[in-house]
View 1 (cartoon, rainbow, N blue to C red):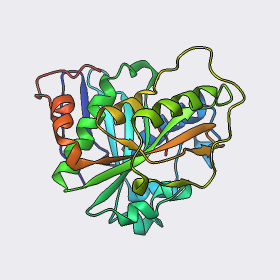
View 2: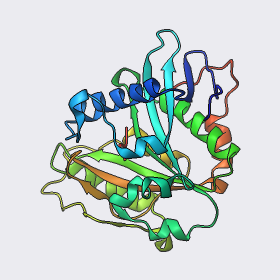
View 3: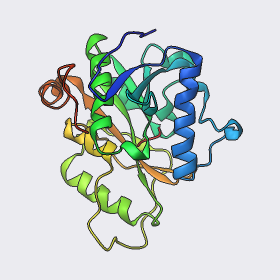
View 4: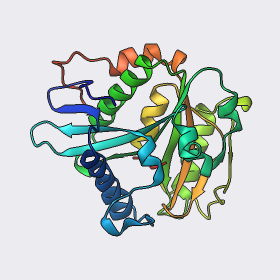
Length: 257
C-alpha cells in the first residue's frame, strides 16, 4: 500500500487512502457529487456510498484541505496488474478496449474523479495530478487512460459542441481509437453560447492527452464519457511545467468512469 505523503502544498495534502474508512470517505464524496449533484442512478447507494466491486482492486488518491481536514477531491487508479483480478478495466464496460491491449509498456486507468463544489477553482485538480504524476513516474507506467464526462442536462447540445472542439484539436490517430458500446445520440439543438471545457477534460488536454474516438452514452449518469489517453513519454515537459512544485509552494488551483 502507498502510505507516504506525496505532496504537501500550503493548503492541500494529496496521498493514498490508508484504511477502509478512508476509502469509504472517497465513496461518500463520490455519492454526494454523482448522485446528489448530477442525479446519477447509483446502484446499491442506500448507504449514501458510490461503491462498486472495482474499489477493492484500486488505489484511492485523496486530496484534503489541510486547515479543516476535509476530503475535497479523490480519484482511483486501477493498474494493469490489478485489472485482471477485477475482471478487466472499468472502461471495458463502456468501450471496446482492444487498442489498450495493443499498447507497448505498462498502462493504468484513472477513474471516479471528483472535486467538492467549493474547491473547483482548478488548484485541486492540479494537486490531484501531482499525486498521479508522482505515482506513474515512480512505478514506470507508459500510458494512463480514463473517461472524462460531459453532462447532458441540456439534451446534449453542449456536449456535441464540445465534441466538435475536441475533434478539431485533440483527437488521437486512427490506430489509437476505441469504440463506444453505446454511442451518443445526435443533439436536437445547438447551444446558444460558446460552451466551456469541463475542468477535468481541460486538465487532460493541457497535458497533451488525446481523445480516442466517439463518446459513450452513460444513461445512468446522464453524461457523455470521452475516452482519453495520455502517453507518459509525451508528458514529461508539460508535467514539469504544470505540476512540479516545491513543497513550500501553494499550487493555485469531475469524470466518474
